[in-house]
Image (cartoon, rainbow, N blue to C red; front, top):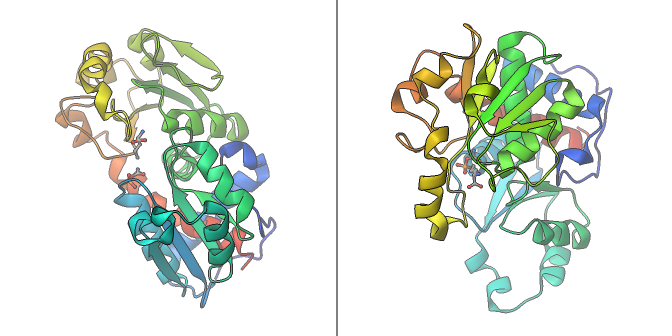
Length: 298
Ligand code: CP
Ligand code: NVA
């Protein structure tokens, strides 16, 4: 059984990592560990989770769907093209109506401002399932994966190499809450649009002595038209065995997936013995279940 909740996020939104206090982020990770050990507790019997996804998704969509089912609730996919929204109904009216049917809504879309509009007009908790700006559910799974492997987040040294993506922005912001340090190596012009603790341009400098090395696709959803330029500019930032050799001898690798072997990461690293990537993907399920139980105060 899960322990009584010391922290409640009842009725809140999770739009970005800054919406969380350090104790709240820790409570999500602690609860995820409890739920991972005992996954089929019906803590959210009858709860309804809407999944409004305006972008592709494998992990986020399925982990939210499986997670709410394991908790005794149901996920309702809301394909944008199937909603009256695509025929001109306002987001305001859609959010208002959906709030009468759903207990919680997860939104994946392009502009972060659109997510904020969903949160403003919905009276139920809204979860960021990825925008161009942040991917907080991914960061929570990443922090759990690091904590699982190192035993503690305090003082952990995380190196990021490649594009300063939405995933980096959330991972670094969560580090500020939970005590790990992120050093990012990004080419000029590809830095995270948030203030990071440390950004360098040389990937070797970021990786030297790191406990964890993380990367992400070079071409995020919505950037497909920049493909040629991005492949050129990011090529020196590929995570390969030679770069990984500069990290701590016990260092491991994370990637939010989907991966593009031969682009941001080599197949040797992606599928190698130092990859924590598949545990990381599974942890999406556990942290999102924890988040749902805290938002719905079960
Ligand atoms: N990492 C992640 O969010 O994966 P999906 O795009 O498959 O949901
Ligand atoms: N940065 C990537 C993450 C995909 C999970 C994107 O936004 O497409």
